[in-house]
Amino acid sequence: NAGVTQTPKFQVLKTGQSMTLQCAQDMNHNSMYWYRQDPGMGLRLIYYSASEGTTDKGEVPNGYNVSRLNKREFSLRLESAAPSQTSVYFCASSGPSGGSGQFFGPGTRLTVL
Amino acid sequence: AQSVTQPDIHITVSEGASLELRCNYSYGATPYLFWYVQSPGQGLQLLLKYFSGDTLVQGIKGFEAEFKRSQSSFNLRKPSVHWSDAAEYFCAVTGGGNKLTFGTGTQLKVEL
Image: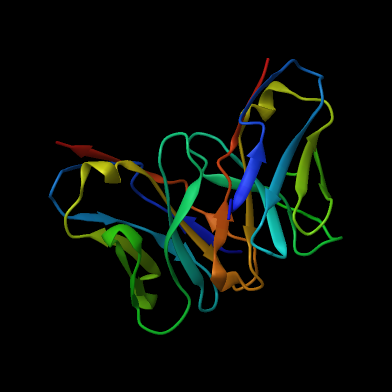
């Protein structure tokens, strides 16, 4: 099992460019998440998907969109990148209840110039 | 709303010494609590979790944590730290749903 995979690992964008971060999990989890990690701020939830076909905003959704393509895949899109979106982005997945914990991908390091 | 406080931003310990990382949470009912570890350039790995039963929980890599309801704490401990334990540690809480709230992390440095 690969667990949670993310592509790309690194990306540099110019202000105003768009891109999509890809995430896939092979654990048959229903729930998937996108976080951003910034120094001194821990992880902040951008969007999550409790099940295939549903998505909900998290703590910091502005400037992002998501698509739950199927049970395995959950993508994050930046339509017009801004320097404030320079961050490390993590995808995670979890089983049916809160007690199972979340499993994280290796992250995407994004720099917006 | 649920929240997590990790009061120590940085901690330095000598290899072989004991370790305790502090975590305080705020939640109205019995929480689900987690500790994660993040090595440089890596994703987060689940160390251990608590949601009911014995208040002392064992995790991977020799870590343990104790849930103290009266103190709203879930501190992480290890009797003897190894150089490979140097990493950032995150405490997290949820009320049983799937949305986790993370603390801001504690960076652990291990002196040889």
